[in-house]
Amino acid sequence: MSSSPQLTPSSEKSTPVLAGYLDKHLPGPFETLTHYANQVVEASDEAGIPRKTLELMNFRASQINGCAFCLDLHHKRARKYGETEQRLALLSAHAESGLFTKEEEVALELVEEITTMSISHPSPELFARARDVYTEQQIAVLCMAAIGINAFNRLSILSSHPVRVGKHARG
Image (cartoon, rainbow, N blue to C red; front, side):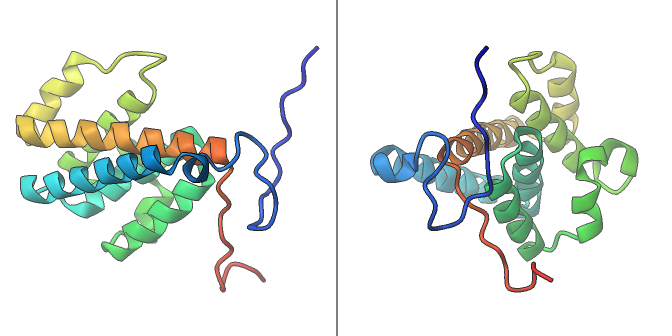
């Protein structure tokens, strides 16, 4: 009977529990991934997709994947771009909340289906709905954004990147 590794909260001084800091061991591929993400943001800006929409997607994929480091990072970024605490709190129930635009709903569905595509491939119906509110270029950007955040989630989870405690988090 094999036991799975015990995951414990990391601190900046502790040794990562899983694969070690992959970004430190292989900085070249990490820099390439970061460059990819920056290119997606640039393409998003050029295509007219709000950064807030990208951050909602990043946050949602990180929820699905269970990446604490990325959840913390993208929560802060979403707030920076004007996202509300209420919408972030209800993001996992976005379809039922009635708080998101048609465009945001489609973007969130895309990231959910791309994130879970090992279980079920994204549906043609979703892409048909996406074409009702986005151009082909915008859909490509949203798909590439979903691919990128999933790569970052996996890197951060395997590296056991720590969540840094904020000055107002304790107490």
